[in-house]
Length: 402
Image (cartoon, rainbow, N blue to C red; front, side):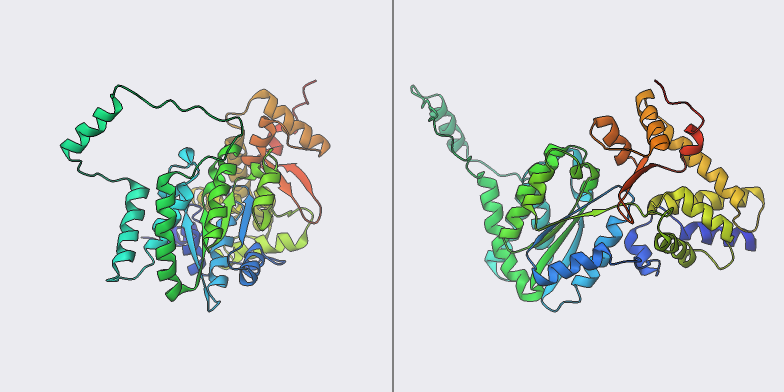
């Protein structure tokens, strides 16, 4: 293998966008935020109120998972608190989420923290949690089976008539059993871990506001059971009709915006450090680094993916390092990909935002552009929205439709 190929493989690996964020932390790729990070803020709030609940909102690729993992490490420095990270999308079908699922996923995770024991109550509770979470089979005596259906087809049946006064629906039997089992194992886990804080990731991919709002019932229940909860949610939760309910449900509501690399020097330096800790010294030309930062729009995942694409361009062109022309080619490809599948009305929205700089996401089409990272939101040094810079060259010469 040539030295050049070996070098480029190492550079590509350092910017593997699909890599586990935890692995990136282990490799020393984490760069502290220029100001107080969400990880520090969340860890500080948990330190004061271990069973509090926190909602972290942001676009996909904005760095929320990394912040959760750093918060986990900060929390685990406390002597009486243990933070446990869970990616819900690995354990459950996000599109099928409903109240009770978070409880079940959390219960399974907590049960795995319990050391081997001879305590029959704990062992029974762990089995109950597993059976309720994943389902189970049981043998039914034929006589009982026939007796059951004999009662159903008896000469008389009971007709139920609802009263005028609406009453709260009763907690399902399965949830009651699950909560009882959780209470047993929580006491066993507390002896070793103290207060357990659940860091629940992956729900930023849930694009149905009503479903996500319904899951907050589980968050409240977990808190009442004595657990702290930090939940990652979709960006549309910050704009949908359920926002007020969400804010009222949790202790704190935080938003992870993009970094405004055009108007904030600290943000530019932050992204420059991210490039520096991953790339070999001298591999990325300074002007190429500036272009990478610009075309990323301040989206961390786009910065990583764009850099890797530019490295590929550099290798295929025969260059020994990464230059601005390689970034330009990669940015054009990124911009074209972001335009794929857009309707004419969505392109018109982006044309107006690029020209006027005004954007208040209200319609489904506008929210889709925000969720997909085609329109970016910044909160510092001022709140503003902008079309992703990789897209602008492709639409800036197109007149806004009347």
